Length: 241
Image 1 (cartoon, rainbow, N blue to C red):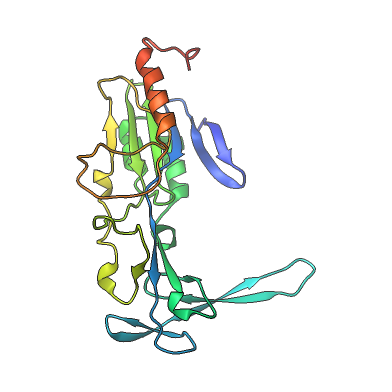
Image 2 (tube, rainbow, N blue to C red):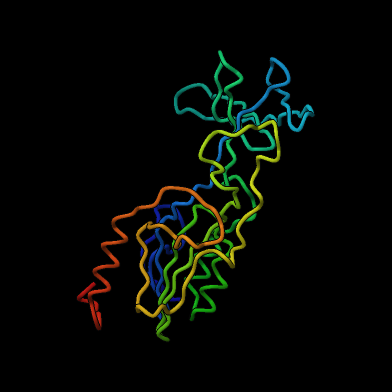
């Protein structure tokens, strides 16, 4: 294994780099993968809540925070079907909100993906090696000695109704939840486009005819400037980059 590139301090693996056969890079995807749900409490202690006209118990989790030179703090976190209660209003409990966030889901293995990329030899190794990367979703660009280039939006992206997630939703009705996730095979991606390059600058991920609704924050300007510059270049060499 002979890999060079950029790593994150304390985090094993190369996130932007190359080996003897391929190169890869990442920028954050702007898709919104976090929604808020207003909780309807069933008791004053806020240990029970209403969901689909039924009373549910919260799950209490205790987080131990060790303070250097001070007293240890025990923080009690209330978990609902949607996720943890992150916003609490002591005077107005009707405003308490739970966070539904992809990063709380299990099943991801981002470290394995970085290992897969470090040992990949071709496009098939790249495309088959990244599906376990769930969060935070990334624009993963790729190039190989064989002459292939590609980009794929890799992450666990919620399957939402139109406009869902733009505002706080009613957490007492489970029908307000996500409709699963966009199949990873249908995440935006392209291989060997006719224009001769792929680019990644946190830009909007798709054209308007993409069949799935999503919302989020996307960088609109850097991507445009990057694409205009690359489109104007011919027979690009390392010095051009």
